[in-house]
Image (cartoon, rainbow, N blue to C red; front, side, top):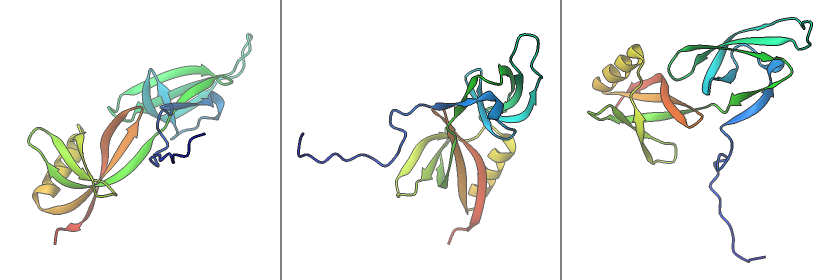
Length: 160
């Protein structure tokens, strides 16, 4: 073995899967599920009884967490479904560029410049108005399956 020390960054997602399996019968309302390769928040779950040919089925209705579209899926309750790893991180808003990208301050002091403004109109106007008024804004960024999007906004007071 070599005497070299190996240093790894503390993020545990290097090479990790974007989803994990979970039995369909254990997924509940307000959980997450992958429907048609899109990460969704479950808004409705109904389970049918076992029929003549065996399996009880779960009917999932989910809303895509990034574009808000409603998706549905029916899966036998004993089968596994993909569940996305969903993370929410808060960043302080530093700047908004003319081309619709935001500049965010991470916890370790670096900047993150690869995110666009959200497509949700009310959130978009809140961010632009608050930034225009010179308020200190903290945005929540939701990430799942390799996609990221600003999903919420907090006002932490005026800039000093």
